[in-house]
Length: 405
Length: 192
Image 1: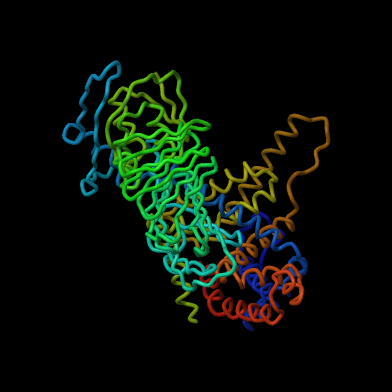
Image 2: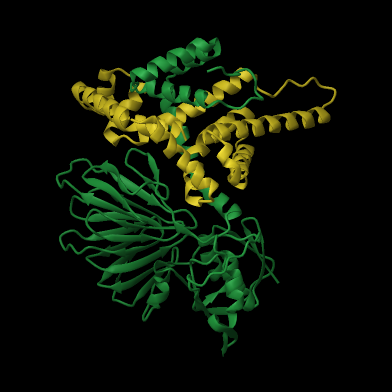
């Protein structure tokens, strides 16, 4: 096992890494006899080894180092997404196909409506028709199933890389992972202590979650939800940020409440609804799909009936929209962008959240409004090609999308 | 446990990456990014450049994936490549500092070889610890962590408000779990 320890031009030896791993397990008192023998032999090699192990055995700051490691593990998740965006072309590269099939699959209808031109488009790409094209065009892959789960003890699991199966046991619940979703399976109802877990999606991520009461929850990109691992007491309270769609399990004895930072609360009995509370959107919008909810904001209570949408603008009164566009409110959950009635800035806010971008405008984009749906599994360039034909010019510099004149 | 089997499984990840499987690369990235970043930040004392350096190492690996068959140990390969990049970075920075302040005597920024070796050992030991602890049930995890920080069984019992016998029980359980399950996965990653 000769090693050139002092020579920094030599390769790092796998044996060195093995020694480090064994030393780590020694600290957890989980060594086998074979490990002990191996380590003893390694120590005989030179004093540098002995000095390091001596020092490592005496460390009393491992918890702090592990906390730091945990922070870097989060960073690794973010950096991987950035890395993929920069260096992985989506293997089946579809731009080529899109251009060829332009006439067939993209209809552009210009309607004149008042002062603004409304533009309609819909893009569907059939995944079975794909042409392969090696290319080095700078592109950004769409978001996918990515989320972080923070347990009651503060430890965090990167869900995109975690294996399917049981992830952890928390107060009263088993946490199970199935592809793209997390399920809390309750196994005990008499819980004294309440533990809270948090699921958080990054920009470019979405995830599905089933709470211990059977309520189903979908998180859009850059969103979070905090919930107890077992529902006890007289109500079921969760906190959220960003955009979340709920299908609440019916339980009249325990109302379900969704709280937001801004002091807005939605109370429900058993229902399906969507809440969009992104900081960069002008209003918190709650859209009721079925059942009934009560929105509580700034001491004002408002009951919603299916098809209604409430808008709460910071510090302002609540406004209720009848016949809200439900398809638009939950398009994201169904894998679509729905830009009906959006101005360019609204369109770009959604794109920025899904492709993890910053958007910069070289000039005022004006009041022009759009109509149309685009699939969320396209790459950025594919989406932008559609917009380009609607006279939206842009250039991409790293993670910055610049809307030019 | 048959070592040859483990070895084959370890090489399977390498072969998948060599074949261009992005999921296999992602797995390696998430596993190895933290220790490489910790090593690099310690050598160059600059987190933002450390990010660049570690990303470059992974990019180098990915771009040269077709010739990975000649690499016997992916982890050692990544440590080597990252360490070399960090040292190059220090050399360049030292040179530019010298140019700027020619008159002044510059202290060498590069760490002595021994420190580099210690930094690699620490990073890899930490990676092993983190993976092992993450695999434990939460109630075991706290007991093991406090134990590593040097607290006695009774001190741990006080801190967690449980009985000393519960602490001993969790400790024994952790050790059993680690020996059974983790040794296998550690061996796997060792031979990767």
